[in-house]
Image (cartoon, rainbow, N blue to C red; front, side):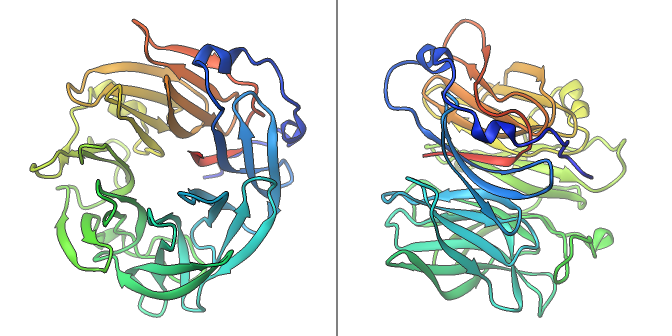
Length: 364
């Protein structure tokens, strides 16, 4: 399904516009929004913008990227290649210089996500072992100077690993194994009749802590958010009948099993069997989700599961928490900031370029 419309890349040259949206957010330094973006000719960029619309960099790259991993101390970020890319791009976030094109071994490809360890020395990426189709791995890389060097890998304890995040403490990981087997250089799903999606907790040395599944075999566990108290939320992409009623959002609270998050049927149906990015606002205890195929954006209270916002947003893509709420990008329209501290959630259009944003964003 082609999600991008040909809106042009004119916004990449947008100068700083009105500051109202950010001043409305509050005082303090503006975070740097990092994301992947295309232009109307299908060229791929790694971009960094301030929320007032001012561009920090737009670096052209060879392959389409998916998520972004910012270094915890240095002005570096790795833009991770979208499945089945064999390239990811290490960028200096001060000026957009391409420091390294990180290439997988010949029998591996990236699955779109990765993250740095809190020390900044180690990087972990979800990958596919194409020599043994269906075997998911975490590539382990070490930062030496301004270059990432592959040191080894761990099993993801599942098939088709997609997103991974740190658990509180920063020494153990949660991995969303999508359960879908793909072969080299392909997005063709090879095992829809035998999918094995799972939520895995593991030590960063590769040892398995736990592995849990949702009842629906074709409900691919894809994206994640982790709260400071260890609450885990996952978003699913269902590969079965479009009319099946399956839990597209699931939660694992500390000490409890992995189970569906209570969704209203109207919201579940509006997602069109597909969720994309999730974010948790720890201070406000809010959960946000984008559903681009349903063109909907949602916010719930994380503890009570109360639905606080359900609004149309064309091809909504990445979502990230900022001090007063959430920033959301779009593949077809304006980026927005949702202010969540008042009695009701209020949307503000940002002066960022409109359209052609990929599924994820990170704020550094």
